[in-house]
Image (cartoon, rainbow, N blue to C red):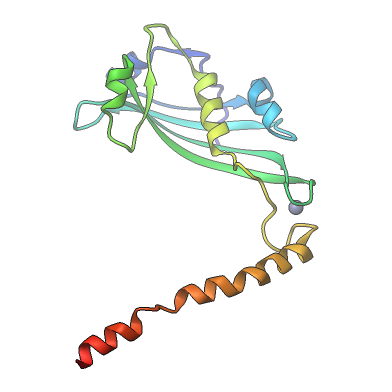
Length: 176
Ligand SMILES: [Zn+2]
């Protein structure tokens, strides 16, 4: 397990030229937006970053983040551990015009010529990895009984969809 702290600022274009790989940790406690989006986030995020240029000449920063935070289950309102294991691919662009022409597997990161404040980028990606409506997994939530009822009432429309109303028509056409 690597545990070196990541640099606070980086020059992303120099990282790209050198095809650098960075590994390290950042303390979650320093991320104010993450703190206000979670019940608890007091550990570290383990970060792996890779810089380079792809075959189309796009400069990229790819990464993987691993962390664990505590969220509030929106069904029972109890805390739930939520492991984050998230990958991202950012294309380093100079302006919005370049950002608009990117392939869809990249998110744009518009550079302003200043050193990149790495923690903000990592925090953005962690926030994107959080579920919009956090809920305990099935069988763990304290409100499992009402949830079961909810599922039962949904069974009928689901099974009805499986019957294809045109199946009969198709048979008729073949027969004719
Ligand atoms: Zn719950």
